[in-house]
Length: 159
Image (cartoon, rainbow, N blue to C red; front, side, top):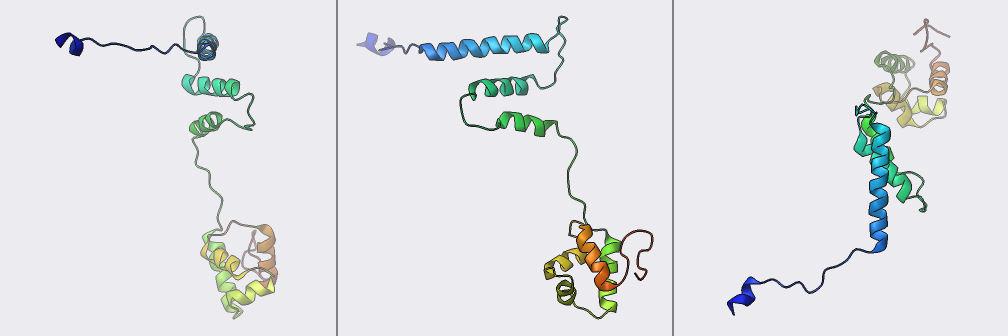
C-alpha cells in the first residue's frame, strides 16, 4: 500500500500538434533572422526596442490573413517612442479679456453676441474663458460684431 502513495503514474502525455511545432519553429527562425539584422557583425545592439520590434514582426506575419487594418503592437511602440506632449492651442488670456470687455462696453450679453455672429452661446463662453481652440473665422465674426480688431498689431482699435 505504501508503494501506491509514493509512485506517480502518468496516464497520457500530450504530444504537440504539427501546426504548433511549425509556428514555434517559424517564430524562432524569425527571431534569429531579426537578431542578425539588428545585431551587427560586432554584436552591438543597433535598436533600443528589440522586443517591441519582434512583436511587430510577429504581428505582421501571424495577422496576415486577418482583416485587421493595423497592429496594436505597432501603435503601442509608436506611442512609447513619442516623447512630446501634444495639446491644442487655446485662446490667449488677453484676447479672452478683450472680447469680454468690448462686449460689455457695447452692453451685449453673450447670447446677443452669439446671435449676431450666428453661433451658439457656449462658443462665446468658451472664447471668454479661454477654453476655445482659436478659429480665425469665428474671431473675424466677433471682430465685425464688436467693431474692433482682436488680432495683429492693432489689437483693440476700431475697424
